Length: 406
Image 1 (cartoon, rainbow, N blue to C red):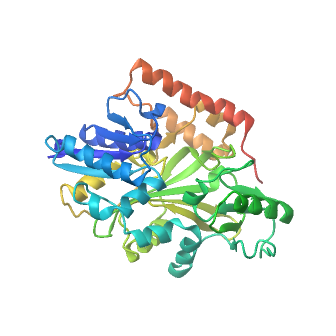
Image 2 (image 1 turned 60 degrees about the vertical axis):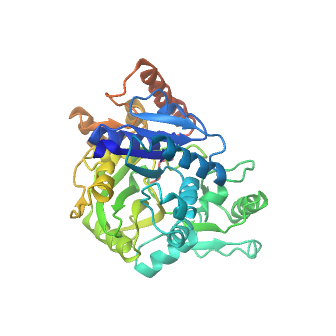
């Protein structure tokens, strides 16, 4: 039965490879990835086929492509699971649910809930409603841009309320998010963003002090009935610090925290969430609280750390939609190191030496994994390009080392 399932993954990056590897690790099946460009992470792979469609984000092209995939493969496969690795693909799936659901299994929540959660302003309103901790927040609009009066001290964090809308604009000095030390700089950055054509609100937040190791990530899976079936917490020990890659995790140790698990499980089930979810949190030592930054309404780019820790992402999908199992919730308690940077980079730049030592001990015990270093997909081509992909971090971290905050 499982061999008659085709996972169709939208995206060709490391996130897509991690999903395909999860299916292959657990069931030995091969996935199909669709994308706008053939990225190195998924090229020449034994576990994933790749099709490139340059205009895939055009709605008509998107639908025509997916219906073609179904027609070409319906005699070989009985079930098709459609999965997203980017916000814009999730938008297209949810917006076209009625058509796509005739051909594909769609493990996603409804459109209204997706829009609420992806807009950071409305997400923080939901955090307030459901008692979830988040940083102090101030909203900049085009109407109040000349009268900004934030209620907390500098430095502050600034980011767009809508990542999807922000991805559509470009301007000199654009960054993924900003750490700002003065009101003058705050006003300039906000005006640059609005002048670029961005038409949504801007979030300003109390900057929570702390190094990379105060960041945490949580991956969850909620079944088709809105019940949480899997939760896996990870502690970041190293992040990327380039202007547009800041916050991308480079090393995570899987962990557990019952208080976090209980709070987020209750939240997801109360809002009837369906599918994978990915939360970014930061520990604030000033009040000993874990504060939510955002939710991704899909698995995150580092989500293979969950599979590596022993909770294979694909298993929860297959048992839910194909085997119709109704299992109890599984909470990660295992310690495993996930890496997306060379070990020498980790040794040199990880800011917390105690946590680094924990990571190094896991390496000694061979309890560590890279998403792209797959012994079942180990051709000379892939070994070479994986080396190139990871080697680039030597230059990135030399040019943009972590800022060590006391």
